[in-house]
Length: 79
Image 1 (cartoon, one colour):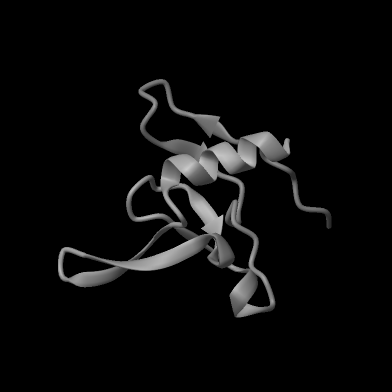
Image 2: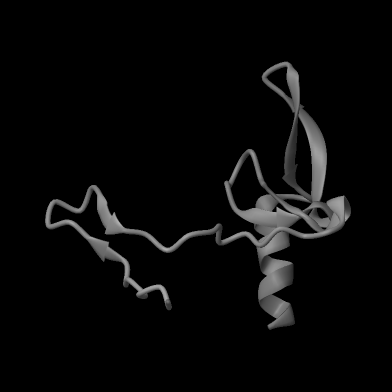
């Protein structure tokens, strides 16, 4: 038997799904270095190669390198 496909629908109140597509928008990769992480400052997901560690609030956190603004400008000029 084929499984019925269900489209994603949001309740009228906008808070809950009646059904939700399975999986994550961030595909799993086979190598650890190709994975993405979110920047602690701007929250955008970036490949690990575009992040650096910086000590914030007494703990090392991943942040955009060289900075969030400069990285965004570099990516915009590549497009």
